[in-house]
Length: 181
Image 1 (cartoon, helix red, strand yellow):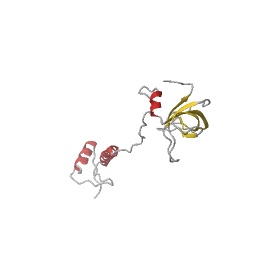
Image 2 (cartoon, helix red, strand yellow):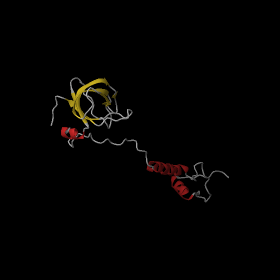
Image 3 (cartoon, helix red, strand yellow):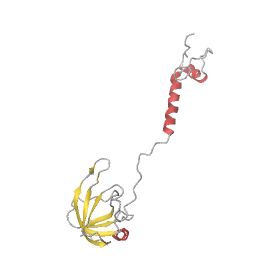
Image 4 (cartoon, rainbow, N blue to C red):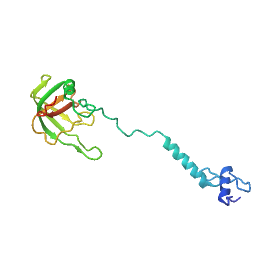
């Protein structure tokens, strides 16, 4: 028995719908399991498969958003009084031993490491003449270093961790000349 084919586009639609040729003979199934006008059947099957794949939940590729900096107001300004209240210690000193880790597209941020050499404490105890190492981060220590780190700075810090593997954190830092209230 030879292969039965539909002769016209109109009869091809009927063939695909009922699986029989116009003369009533059953049409053979192709490799995809379609009968008759297999191009139409394959197209419909491809659309259904694509729609099913598109409906599957995609894994989340974005990271969780960071909380706003703790010393920042809703308008994006730094609230020094709020910083002072949140800080476990406030010190003045110099920024030394800066190692830049500039990241390009898509981050465009310098995740610099630096040491803060404490010269005097305004809040807290036992940290004078101590060096504290920091690294600018994405969600913690978000404030980037200025291009010029010379001069004296004031830093608002949180309690230093006892575990050396946990990074030190700061809330905010500013040049000492920037006395804002």
